[in-house]
Length: 506
Image (cartoon, rainbow, N blue to C red; front, side, top):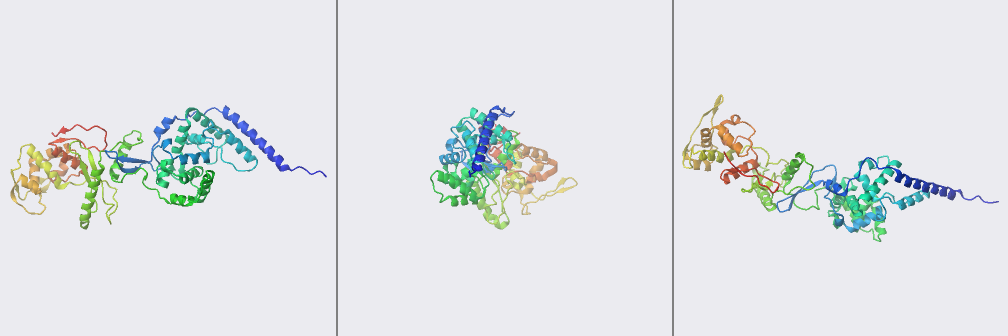
């Protein structure tokens, strides 16, 4: 009796033939399918359009003084040149994702054939999607993988795009762009963000184990630790390396909580100014720059101002004072050398304060008096030796009377202008304000840049005692005008290379 030949090999051979036929058809269709209406960008445009999610504020000397996140949708770092990426990561990535990257023209037909043959024999093989094909899908939204998977037409379009990309870009450009645009875990996009947030390093400092972990995350960005460990260990073994420390590395990396940009360095010295820069650039209507211009801050002066404010607040804590602000201006140029919007958070028991007290409006009180007396001196209504009566005063104010009083509720009789100002007496200041007239005093304060929000009539005679709300920045800049003999110009906090010309007060 003759035995029937086994049918399984015959069916497998037939299946292999069909797979190879399908592969041949795919090759023919890939050549025949026209390019879609969209066009892939050039490398320089992709690099120029790259925007990191965190920006660094530099002081006038180029020292980082604050890092601020400006994009909440993704975490990406500055563009990293291929030469600045760890060779270990480049090796692990190509070994894992695209071994023939340097040889193929965008589509690895050999890998496609191997995949078709393996599918025919029900064996597993690596994917046939090249880095170039993956980059094309990252650059062009229409090529992104749909939730239900790509159709044959989608795959052919991706293959055609990869070939077009290879025709226009160099291999190094393709690999560099891929490393900067590939999603790696959660919100992390690109090797700069992944290296920083997972390992606390620059992309150039990744070792073989860390590189294997990132290469494993390319295939499955949000896989659990065990799956990533298996994949990374396979990569290391192909490199003839051990996997002993792999579990510890992955555990530490995945245990890290998202935080400020570690690898960019610098101190957290100027959060409020960094937020102001971000808001100003966003409101300018121009595309956000890849890097911020330098600020006018001086990191050394900023540290001194912050330390001095903290010491002062610590001394005043028993008086229910738990926050403050400080600003330092260069008299000649108007450059902001220090900007401390709040120092509440570092003090024990104090609540974190996101309010920028440098720009918050408050009544300046007696700090307005020098401008009252200076205007009177300028107009030759008084001299420093002139005597003013420090006695009870009643001034008509609308339907009532305005009766200013000194802080200690005492009166000293006739006092000199010099004494009245040095003692910060209220009644003499109001007398001088009434002598000047409320409108002229109001106009002088506006000319100093205090930008009062209400009218002169709204404040009345109390304007001479600082009843109008002003900012610390505006008040400090007004004192700068006193130091410069009446010349005023706006303060600046970004180093544009130009200083606004001063103008004389009218």
